[in-house]
Amino acid sequence: MTTSALPARHTSSNQRWKTLRKQLPNYLFVLPHFFFFAVFLLYPIVRGVQISLYDWKIMLKDQNFIGVANYQALLRDRMFWEVLGNTAEFMIITVIINVILALFVATGLKHKFFGSDFLRVLFYAPGILSVSVIGIIGIRVWDTQIGIINYFATTMLGLPRVSWLGNPDIVIPALALTTVWWTFGFPMLVFIAGLHNIPEQLYEAAKIDGAGHFGTFRHITLPLIMPTMLFVVVTQFIAHMQVFAQPYIITGGGPGNASRSATMYLYETAWKFFRFGYASAIAVALAAIMIVVTIILFSIMRRRTEY
Image 1 (cartoon, helix red, strand yellow):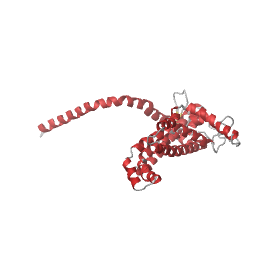
Image 2 (cartoon, helix red, strand yellow):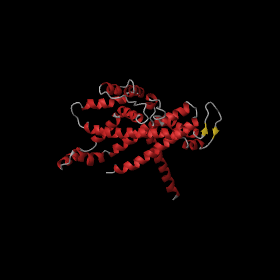
Image 3 (tube, helix red, strand yellow):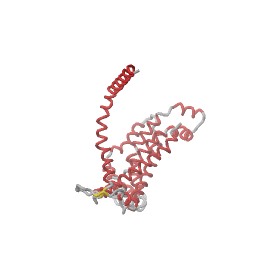
Image 4 (cartoon, helix red, strand yellow):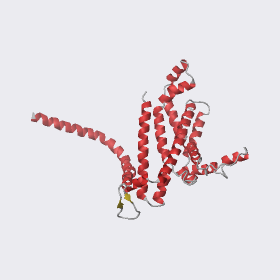
């Protein structure tokens, strides 16, 4: 029994080594990306969590460890909850309009017709602009004195000027509409790609059965587009929860703190007041919120993707 077991173990070892040699090129291809992932993403995340446990002072070698004191202070920070509410309002408005409008337009542009390619390019074109350009355009559109909307409203319609960026009740919707115009193209193209994966035979069968446009959309398009919908909603949620440049450039967070976002508050805490430990705690808290909400979105929408 001993003489037969040794060759078996030797053969098994040789087989594992041959398998490893075959898989080695795969690991070599993955290694460059893993290196950059570890250096520029994984390490900063771990380092940020570590800094959040300290009263971190810049240029000091020995930092004061305070444990979860930054997180306890964050729970009592009214400013944090205010800017988090602003961010949530902006995110909800932007995501809802973006998803509904993108799906609606994608349904119309699914099939080829004269000018469809031009319309796709036209709708996607704002997405190639930098956020600085979007900020300048937003100011020119919404400004009370020199804004395009107020100019046409007062000149052509005789309406009074509206302080779009100076009214706390409408400043976030104004920023959200600007962002929708800027980011609308990407979810539209994703929905177009998702609609192309729906078999045309289903639409033909529904047409034969006498289903109208609304019934076809409700019972065929909407259920079968849910996997794409999940991707769009999650990516849009994560992107717009990190809004920074639009309020920073267009309103500066005003009026008061009405349009100040959570990432603006994080940035100012770190680089204006140099409270790096507290800023890291804000970053960790925002990341935790986004992770929890993303898991909830997956759990809710995944059930609808099972068809």
